[in-house]
Every structure is written in structure tokens, then in C-alpha cells.
Image (cartoon, rainbow, N blue to C red):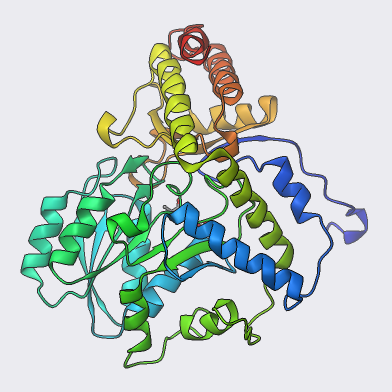
Length: 396
Ligand SMILES: *Cc1c(COP(=O)(O)O)cnc(C)c1O
């Protein structure tokens, strides 16, 4: 048996993170996180918390007062939305086109509510007509939930249309924007999203562990009018609002992850400096260069062009190639991480992320060059040496 005596300081390798998250963290953010810890009720820290709220309102494009980071990862943001808005006996329409819609179903059922599933094929966006039919068949439904950017497949759904349909049937809408926020347009107020959650480690280029959320006035009214107490004490927004809310009473609820919030603050300052629209354009243009490279190599995309996420590229593994061995070589020989397929797509695709700070020309050329080298060496049926030149012409 190994003994702990051999254990010393952990020094992680320097990797390039082009998987489904976490993505490369901006050095300015890592720097911010190394600053001195202060008390979470220190007036200087409380002032910074207010700035984080304002910056998150910008990122989400909302005036919602209840816009805060939950002190836990994206999955806790998901859970925050469901535990607060859903009560036992409710009916929730859950649209599923990948892994994360399945987790929404789990959340609904564990709350003693009924999940009515609207299923679409993995790789396709959610079909608004199917949502409409489900709402007609279930007039008792009070909530609609869907994933805006399905990280398991790289498909983006039309959030604006889905929200409009849900509201026509008097439902509130819960949206997963973990992978979309900061990478593609997310317009909470314009689209009428009632509850939304995201994560810090995808297109915000921050470390994992926080989940920005935002709730509309209609959502807050429902939370305040609940018949049953919220099942989770930690995620009960009635309590969290006393900590993050206006008026700076700042009743102690939990100890905020102080240094993680320095990091999120810096990530949001960086986003504001670049400008949301510019960030969206950068993701799209960089994706087009990566796409040109993949296609020149002979790999094809899983998602139809109109629904393709620029920040998550799911491409097919060439015939006869051991996809895990390729990822292993990229990691060991090039310090490059790309993602595997999940669920129905396991073993069939790679998921290549271009998220936030990692979404740049250097990473596109590096990834294509490294993948070309490894696949060529393994004798895979690809067009060798074509990927980098195809991407290059779109970069310079
Ligand atoms: C990553 C992700 C999550 C979960 O976030 P964690 O921070 O890993 O808990 C949820 N939904 C989507 C779409 C994601 O990509």
C-alpha cells in the first residue's frame, strides 16, 4: 500500500483545454483568485458582490434583480431553478435532445412532480412544434424546461421561439445556458426567460465551481407564493435573497467562496471589456476556421449547420479509429485535451470546445495540427496535411 509520505505539492501540467469544459482559464482570472482572502461580510467584499451582480446582468442581458452566482457548479444552478419553481404534484414539460435534458427530468421527478418529455434526436435542436403539441395535450403544465446549448451534442435550440410558445400556454420557462453564456447570444429579458442558470468554466473562462443564475419577477412571485417549503435548505432562494439581496442586510447564510468570486468578477470584467457582441463574433469566426480544417481532413459534423454551436464542435471519428487512444495521445504528447462523445454518441464522436479564452486562432491551428499528426501516424483514413492550410486561410 502506498503511504502518504511520498505525497508533496501538486503541480498540474500546463494543458490546452479544448473539451466540453473546463476551458482554458484566463491568466488574469487565476491572478485575481490568488489575491488575499477577506471576510465575506467585509464591506469591501460586499461592494464587490454588488459589482458581480451588475456584471452578470450585462452577461445575461437582463434587468432581473435576482441575478447572482450560486456557490456551487452548474448542476447546482440547475437544481436551484427546479427546487424553487417546482412543487410536488406540478407538471413540467422537459425538452430533451441530449444528456442534460435527462438531468432535468431527474430533478423534476425527485421533487414529486411529473415530467412530460418532449424528445428530439441527439444532435438535433428541440422541435418547437413538438413543444406546442405537448402543451396542448397537457394544459395542467406550469413550467417548460430546455437546454439552450446541448454540450453533449453541440446543438443549439431556438430559445426565443420556445419561450414564446411556453408563455402562450401560461408556463414559466427554465433555461440551461451553461455552455451558451458568453459564447452565443443569450437575451434573458428580450426572450422572456423566467429562470436561467449557467456555469463559470465554459465560455466565461473561469474556474469551475460557480453557477450564475437569474430569475424574472414572475419567477420570484411564484417562489414567494409557494405552498410547500423549498426542499433544499442551501438552495432555497428565499434564504439566499437575504444574503445576496438589495438593502445589504447580508444575513449570514453560508460563507461565500471569496476567492472564486474574485475570479468570476475578473472574468466578467474581461467579458465587458471585449463586449458581448464581439465575443459572439469571435466564437463564430473561430469556429468557421476550425470547421474548415475538420472538413478538409475528412471529418464531418454531427449537428446540422443551422443549429451548430460555435463553442462545441462534435465531429465524427474516422472508421476503425480507437477514439480514446487518440485523445490519450493528444493529452500525453501534446498536452491537449478534447472531449469524448457521451451517451448515444459515445465512441462515435469527439467534442472539441472553443470556449471563451480558449477560442482563438492559435488553438485552432494547434488542435488541427496535432490531430492530423496523431491520426496520420495511426494510419487513419483522413486527408493528411490539409486541415491546417484550410483553417489558415480563414484566420489571416
Ligand atoms: C457543464 C454543463 C452542466 C453542468 O455544469 P457543472 O458545472 O459540470 O455542474 C449543465 N448543463 C450543461 C448544458 C453543461 O454543459
